[in-house]
Length: 169
Image (cartoon, rainbow, N blue to C red; front, side):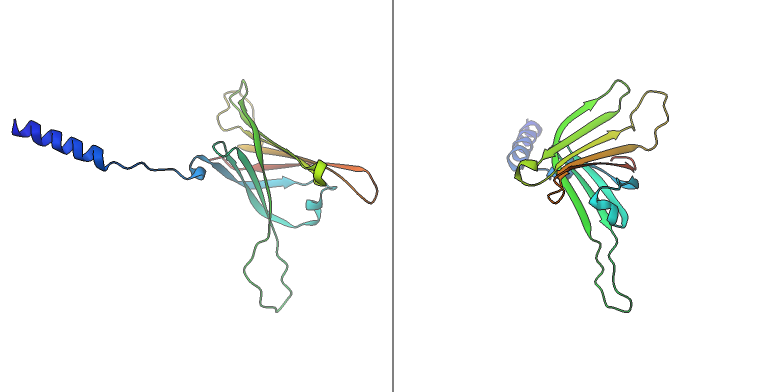
């Protein structure tokens, strides 16, 4: 009887001291390092010297983030800070679908043209769980499309750039 009573007291005290824990929103985010990039010659990114970057997909916060690292040009014999400039595209995740091969396709879309911005569409294909007998270029393939207006010439400029990345994890 004493053992049963002691067990009930122990169980009650453990239930009373249990605390809720919250998880950081990035807990379930998947990310990968960029391996290759093919920048459209009409893109403003074509004038930048890209040295790396990463892709991050977060289905909890519904955001997709593409970060591109560019070279920092420090003049010769000058004292410069250790700094890597980054170009960041953070846009809302529109959909997450799995195709018949098991490839997970993340689509993100943002259109800021009505407020003097540009349209940005990024599609990320995670090929790591594919069951089809195909050879993929990389575990993760990224396609970024942009559209905006040149205010000097009055024409629309559309660009399509592609990236490959390591395994999303």
